[in-house]
Length: 125
Image (cartoon, rainbow, N blue to C red):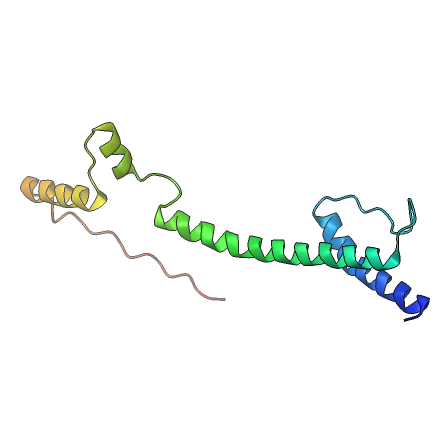
């Protein structure tokens, strides 16, 4: 390959990579500044950096959904039931609380309380 082809490749790589690095808060030093580098080593280094960046970005992209899934399953922090057991205190799940409230309403005779009005529909415009 001739020098103009190498120069073109270098510019193309930097045009792709520089904005990505800047977006991550890295300082991008112009390629030609500082001490002279062997072009082949520089290209190899650029390829390695790009490959590591692509791999790291893919890992981050997989991490967000898996963190959300764990959060919704309650796997990131102990549940209230687990904390109550560890502290030796009582814990009443929501289903048991609702049953108890319904039973109290029935015994008080307020089980047939007025029902809520249905929500008004919004006109689609």
